[in-house]
Amino acid sequence: MSEILRLLIRPLGETILMIAASTLISTILGGGLGILLFTLSQDRFAGKYPGALLVKRIADRAINMFRSFPYVILMVLVLPLSRIIVGTSLGTIASIVPLSIAAIPFLARIVESSLSEVDSGVIDAAISCAASKTRILFAILIPEALPSLISGLTLTMISLLGYSAMAGVIGGGGLGDLAIRYGYQRFRADVMAVAVVAIVALVELIQWTGSMIIKRIKAAR
Image 1 (cartoon, helix red, strand yellow):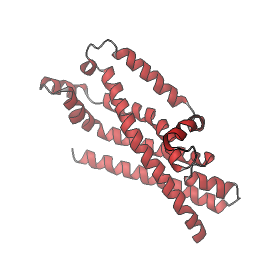
Image 2 (tube, helix red, strand yellow):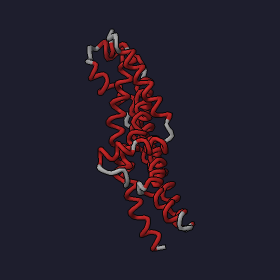
Image 3 (cartoon, rainbow, N blue to C red):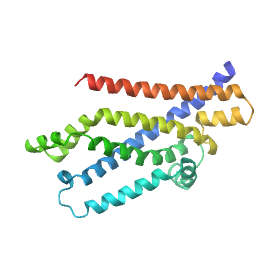
């Protein structure tokens, strides 16, 4: 048992690193893209800008295209980009690149949907008080949509955990790599079982944390 735990420590750390880094990157880029999509679809924000609808349509098509790619295929296609950005196409750090690219369009849709669900009356009330567009977005819309945003981010992190397990196919490290190299290829059912249990435990931890944060946000209102 001590041998299995020793084997588990490093892959567990690699998985947490992949999820944390890709979540941070996708939150920044995907969140920004989601806000852009929302503002382009709202006359209150985009105004009469003639190119808003065209930009929105192009962005929608691009997001749908990236979301339709199976992750394993996307992971292989992005290998050259990983080599350019981090200097290698193998390993934990290299796996962060395809993970982030896979999560960005997913999170962008979540942000756009969450902001769109906010009652339009709240926006109208803010406009009547002469609030600026930036203030409406960051001081009113995002706080109002925060429970939905946290729920979407939780779902994204759980999806990234599943994707990170696939990274073991290309030597990306993590719990998936442990399950494949030590569990499957060496016929160690005990190692594979421990890796699966660790993945399930991480999913439960992420879901519990997200649910607790949402509950506290709602209780504070």
